[in-house]
Length: 623
Image (cartoon, rainbow, N blue to C red; front, side):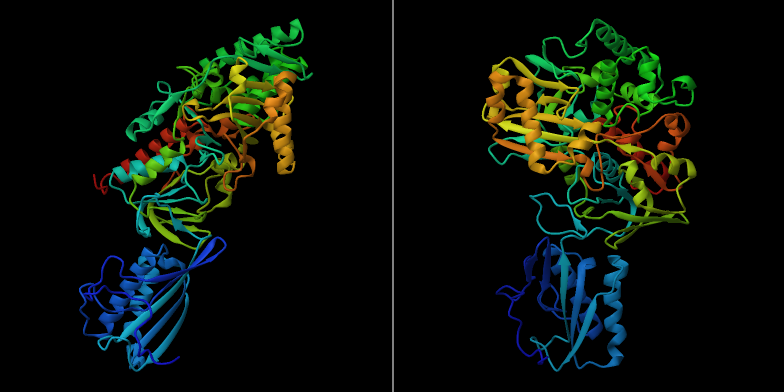
């Protein structure tokens, strides 16, 4: 290479030769989802325009400058793939003064596990006569760990690698835990496997016009879900009541469609079926009330069977009622009645304030209020409340090693963090993707290796008008046949957005997932047309926009709304679900006492784990 005797083509300084906030320069090249960030030559000049006297001091200043340039360009030091050094009057006597600051940059400060390619170019002089050293860096970003940033946030902040707490998972539970830890003065980093935060909440704008639709978690309640509702008030988020006017539509196994002014239960084809439905409904209302959701080892052995067997034990053996029970089970937890333990299912109902609460709207119902801007806005607000740079995306955790009161958490992208405490806030069914050393206790391993994520999908169909409302329908369609299992109206008439959210669950979802995407959409639209009848079928087919979310296929989550347990699992391993393991604490919506599988449960579980950590670190926490 020719001697560096000309000034680089990019300008680092303003007219007064004093660095300004935009003093760096970089070039960005797109490669699909990856980008190359290349810094211009960074010398050892200080911000005030002065120069250090010694070679060692200039190297250190240049290293600091290149770090700042990368961060301002949206890259981190851990993403460097090549470094080029230009040294005036180089000799091996200068090697230690060069190597030491660079290794410190790559290892001690940023924890980069790799050593990028390096090239040393001796030169007789550089562009500035005072300069003794210059460094260039090339970083590859995208598809690797990167910090989550609010859309209004400027600049870049690198995450620290030695912290008080590492939170695994950037869903509602992880963000709630991180928020509480941060508020307690604990230095906290969140490692999120996906390219977004929010977990099973996924709010998105319509392409066809104004409006936000929910492809994941949708509803909250003011009175029965106080913590998540408090967050909407704290962050100034408007809520609106769920639409409840009109009749429901019910379809049985035989395909017969019935319009139901008073709900869907009690629509069996025979008198015996209707009687059995009432027995089932009464049992689901009464039996959970006797359970203690904080104590699991006293559930009667004779009842600790599958939910399907428990229903049969009530005398509900008719094909229709068995199908209704299966439909309820798959709708509520995403799995069939013969795969879910009765103890777990009844405990889940009790955690949601009872059967009527879980299936209804209104002031006491689980489907009470919608967040006008979307539930994901709560997640974003929690993220904004943390220290910039403390949430890393595309960072699935690969291993957690506990040793002498410190945990080393390593991601699949190679980044390593040291923490005094770790909070697991990822779904329990994904624990098996992480190597723990020492291994998780046998009881916890047995539990998490057997939890079953729900088979679940959500299809939101939007229209120009709410034609179903005009026809006196509330937008609730229930079918024992499928593919539509149940639905709700999620329109916002104030902005002209009219949408129906259809849920596909259990084995019906498993089969529907096998279809090509266009056939999936066609199957749902055709089924809706069948449910509304010939007079409205044309309106059902006059679709404005279709959005599909297959939670069963969602990487690092693999199902919704929760992960369920089979028979005898809750009685045997219920204590293991939340019990800390050395310095690892456990959050996630599945570990909640109240509102498992809901945003409220995720938030309260995160708060609980954060409080455990705060108390453990209290003597050293900055309060």
